[in-house]
Amino acid sequence: MNLQTKSYVVRIAALLILSALPASTPLAAQWLHYPTAGVPRKADGNVDMSAPAPRTADGKPDLSGIWTTAEPNRKGSKNSADAPGDPADITASRQMANLGVDLPGGLPYQPWLVPIVKERTDNLAIDDPHIRCYPDNFLRAYGLPHLLRFVQTPNLLVVLDEMNAIYRQVFTDARPLPKDPNPSFNGYSSAKWSGDTLIIDTIGFRDDTWIDWNGSVLTQAARVEEQMRRPDFGHLMVQVTVDDPKAYTKPWTVTLKERIVVDTDLIDEICLENEQSLKHLK
Image (cartoon, rainbow, N blue to C red; front, side, top):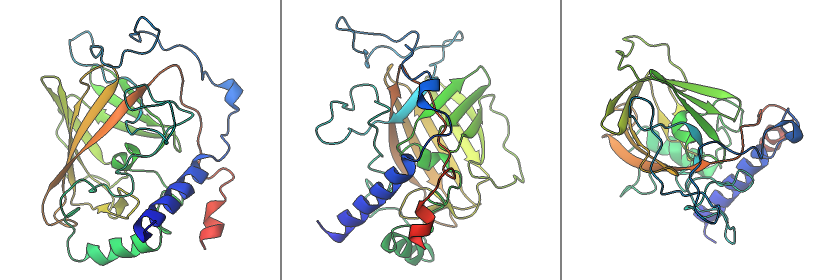
């Protein structure tokens, strides 16, 4: 096992420790096995992941549902990428540690950011805001081993992250973005439909907003475009383009993949409750 692989394994282990912290609400009190309405199923009862995506009254794809990374689960697991996500057996995206893993040459860092990312990678992300229980930016949330609930209304898409009960608002009325936004973890998002694709434009991030475990960041100069599609019932595709001239030498684009989770619900996952990791990292 090389150093990079060892580093990744250690990081995943640390993340799973955090994820396993006790929830503030007993599991028995949650609707963990309540059937999800409107799920298309095959003759054998399994979910038909390739069935047509549901649509809203105005004919747009309905992005509503509980989503998790589309990565295959642990070796030997029955939970493949072509089946609904199993909330008891989810895993992180392969892009969680390095969002630019599929880009030739990796993310195009500005020179000032190169040594910072190297240090954060070498020290196993000891200063990662996620480990310190800060909210996760939505780009990170797509790849973390947690559940996201999308709630779509005619003019608003709400994303609920079970980790620390974080929320994101995407206004789908194509409203103009604020000219002087107050920086935040998820920024300010305005969207419009282009056929069956929801195009989301987001600005207003905090400086040094981590977007992967290696310590890649967004700055206040960043503009993020997401092209979000639900090609069938079971999958969500998010093509992300980041234009952040302060942190990167050129815009870059990656595709993030999610899959549906059914017959379950979100449960409280509060990082600070019985948190034990920080004292071991000091």
